[in-house]
Amino acid sequence: MKRSSCNVTKVVGIVLAIFSIFYVRKCLAGKALFISSGIKVDYPLINLENSEVIAYVTYKGKTYMRIQYNVLTEETKVNGSIETLK
Image 1 (tube, rainbow, N blue to C red):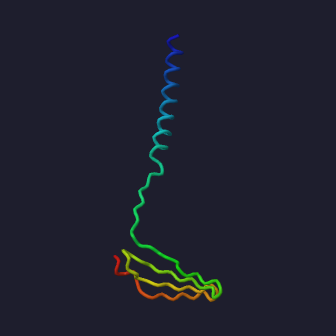
Image 2: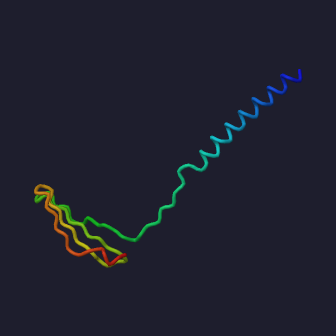
Image 3: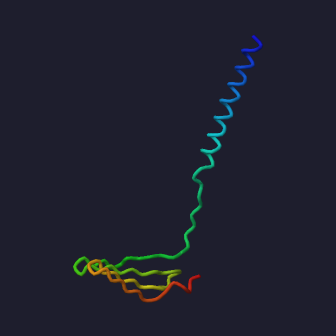
């Protein structure tokens, strides 16, 4: 009798240990905090006839860069820079 109760106690202890390990890992997994940097990219003009896309990169209401991309020729034109935002 004494031996069987000891075995039951060991089995229950092992089950509880395994359960607590997986429960703790599940609670801590996947936590992240995303904060916006304030940089916005707007695509106000998508010209399907000429296959061109124009994008503006803005920060705090001021436009820092204009990007023009031609889908057919894969040509990119960039006016401005975001190097000053560091």
